[in-house]
Image (cartoon, rainbow, N blue to C red):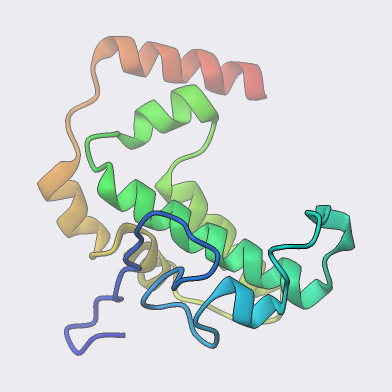
Length: 147
């Protein structure tokens, strides 16, 4: 965590398994060194991964998703909800729920800061647009279908 209270966001470049996957991806520096895989071997199937490998890859994927969403501030939460059935707030809630499953109590607003990269109120002021009536109608239809 940075001194300002904001979490440092992962910086991603073109994916290359032999290089850094993110500047904030401790405790390992590359997929190849952490997973001890030989890229000359045939590809593995996900079910062949050890629990540690699976967890490391899922964590890296999550960080990559957060970085991608951070780079696409133009994509509104309501659009994510309408198209995919989840948004940045859902990710925050899932994060808190996963922690609770592990008997860890996390502060929801602190988790939203992690997901949004900045405090939610600041993100909302800077990037969130007023939802159109069409977006709201679509949202209602999506929510009605999920009940």
